[in-house]
Length: 406
Image 1 (cartoon, rainbow, N blue to C red):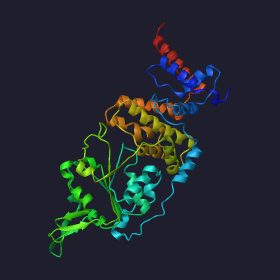
Image 2 (image 1 turned 180 degrees about the horizontal axis):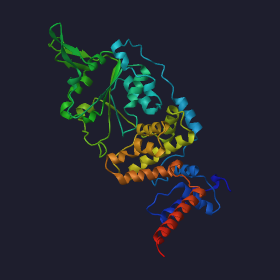
Image 3 (image 1 turned 30 degrees about the vertical axis):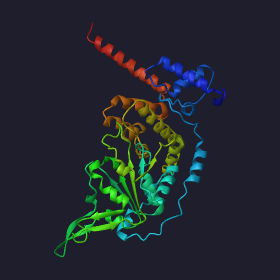
């Protein structure tokens, strides 16, 4: 048999297109291409075939995509190890005891892969800007702020926004103290008075009429609390090292309900658009977080995430899958769940949640082109046993039909 590398890309594509013409409604799988090549005296294993088609931008899930040839796993991991270096510059912060629990821990950022956008976010904060990280679900735009807080060992507060949210709800509340009504500061008010990171997630979910409180917060770096100072009102100045950031999904069919913020707000912010993770980055993240996962299975999970994402995009399905969902599937699998159930419960069944069962079946077909375990090969002994059982049943039925006849 000739070595796999001797098979030209053009030959691979020719075989794929021939099979697609013969099976226009089916997803072509690696084993079919392997068999077709074998008929011409050429040999390539299924894993290599899948990798070759991904490399040339024609993944077997049926979705065209432009991407560079994947680097060898060892090279990818080595490059990641050189990039992922903990920052030594940690602020000398005297954090109040009641806020120390808000400082992210190593466990909170386990498996995180630092990228160029993380370095840029740190520069935005160092320049006293108010960055909006934006992009599709699963690109790390929220996690990046938490990672920055971890690097600097600062308390981190995440506030998830909603349409009728008003900021003063987070300022605090009134309580009784020695028979008198006094104002008790909320966590937000305490946090802004020390070096910290405060992230307003889904900022474009807030109705524009309720977002004016942010203007003074960003322009003057202060909060006015009318209940403060025993009801006389008090202005709280933000600490010079209190970092204020935002995150949002793009407004589209996938993210219904978002508003376009007015220039009076946007003009006070800076922006970072987060790109999708590359296949190599996904591989590194999985290797860092799940060392118990076998290498061949890890590469299959990475390939599935990539091809499933492209399948959704190409077919115009209004839902995203994220690395968080991929990790959920892996954790189910490592916990002992069957591969099919782990994929369905962690990722694929999201299509049931949007009432699109046909797309769910399509996603499962994509999985079958990648995970060898989803296509068990029946042994000849099994087929013979099944045939014997079928014949025995037919003979028994004939005997019963003839019973009682003279």
